[in-house]
Image 1 (tube, rainbow, N blue to C red):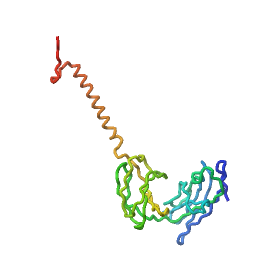
Image 2 (spheres, rainbow, N blue to C red):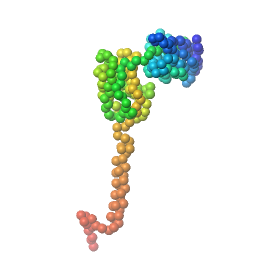
Image 3 (cartoon, one colour):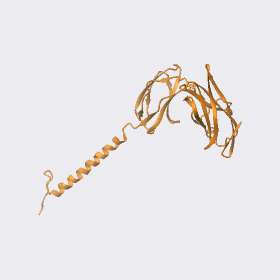
Image 4 (spheres, helix red, strand yellow):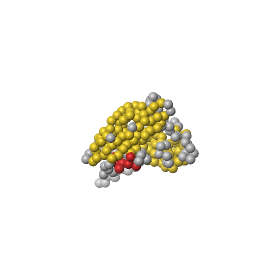
Length: 252
């Protein structure tokens, strides 16, 4: 058993060895290092497979609930579409997961399987989506009984979700007007009953519906009009010429 001190609290960590075996070829996870940093557990591992382009779905479990539900306060090389290689890292925050007073002996286990998407997005090749606009997205696969959730993520953070969508192969996605402009967004399509059925789109950017430059331009044009009008009025006043529609009345 490896012991890992967490600040002034005690958390005893045991990592169970995991061997993933599929067909006649051996695929496995080898733990290279475990350490504590910034109040989080870092698990460095290598995912070995003779096929480097074969994706996996990896999850981290704990003995606190007898390895029933995957841990959620995780980041790094965990989740879906994890490809073989070394230097992989899973970062787990036990205090976010179980509260600031958490301090007990616990075992962790990595479980994995070959990742097979339950649905496949069709031609989702957008480099960017605009706020306030609608986009038709289509997909194939899954059962007609599947009820889907489609969420917009920025990195690992969920920013918007569209729930209880029938698996009819298409959906009109309305991009919220108040979503933050930026990069590193992606769609997450999941089955609302099976947590293992998850698909991500490629990353895209969120942009304004009307570019900021165009929003500012009318103000600049009005300002320019006033600027050019003022000298014109000034020169007219200084010239001494009368306005024929408003003649000056001279009184003695």
